[in-house]
Image (cartoon, rainbow, N blue to C red; front, top):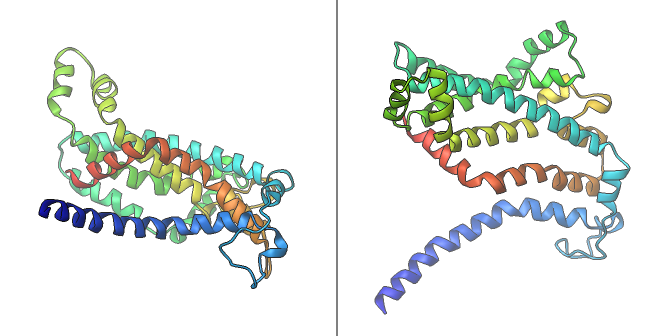
Length: 281
């Protein structure tokens, strides 16, 4: 009886805080879903329970998909995010491998400096970057964001992969080198497959940050049909003091779907890669 009571108390102490925390995290999404399903004439009706969905409708989603440029914004965001993620991962894997597997003077200092670069506010970088984008004539082109997003994606991804590469046994790589493999072959065929959880966690990090980025997208690609989702939603669904709440909430739900899918399929690798990269080395 005492053991059962102790187990019940432990479960209570564990699940109650987790349930409260989950409710706190999911409340914004639940509220967006409720508002997006309400007719416009009921949104500001104070006589109704704000959490009740009366006469639910998909009109907001229909207008979002068929009567607004939202599908084009999704395409723009997807192209930019995938392009920046691929470039950032390619660079971060090489940087993380070099700093995590090799021992040379100043290696740890370089690793710390790379991480500190991630802490530089984008508001300090977009002014010189805007001059570079202007000089190369890249305004309102995909390349403007694909080439500037790695400036804040590479530092953290490199630091994360550097810590994860250090968790992999060196004996496996040395055995491949003894068998005649080159350094690149040993990295590609031995180290990189073992570091896949870390690579996936870095990929999710880059994808999420690129998908939600606002400032660079507003400055470099924020006009016409080239808007990304964060910029388009704010510029087209908010007119002065008029907020189209139904469209805003529907766009919030629809815009978070790609990121939610990525986390749903890769969450285990993301957690293991992030914790290993953060605690080793």
